[in-house]
Amino acid sequence: MDSICAGCLRSGWPAFSLKQVPCPSCACFGNLIRHSILYGNDPASPAGKVKRGQRVLCSNRDQRGGCGHTFPIFLATVLPRHTIAAPPLWTFILALLDGSSIKAAAENLPLALESFYGLHRKMRLKIDILRTRLLGSRSPPDNTRTDPLLATFEFLSSAFAGCACPLSAFQLHFQIPFLG
Image (tube, rainbow, N blue to C red):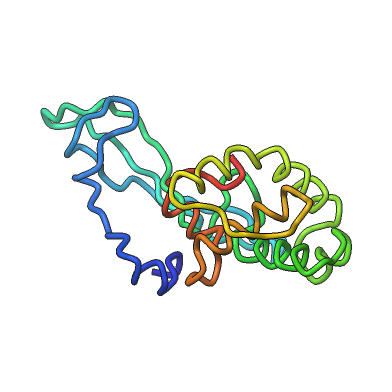
């Protein structure tokens, strides 16, 4: 429950059962079972671990028709293959929208400044994917931004206006990682 905001729940995104979801490898229904918990590094403490998701097995035991492959299901606040979570990255994005520089926006956040320059570059490369997904669900808001990245962030903010963290809502709604 910690990965879904109240606005997302009110918008009608239903909970799902693993038995109702097909395996991404073999497309069989009814064979998915929880396997183990995924942990990752916690940027707040160097030796700490944080829960990032659940590993799922497509069971082929006891006459089941599964393939035996495993795959991860991440929490909505997790950005797969990144140490930073979605809420601190959204704080960074909000500071950029307010006109801050990358350096000023990255202050008081849990990663090194070089990491935020890399994240900014990566987000700039993902504009086409983000806008294509968002345009499939609604029309963009009117804005006067000349920077396409900032215009995309405003579009994301308006698309998930009732959510505390639109990045988490984006991942939950479209079922794709925000940063690819």
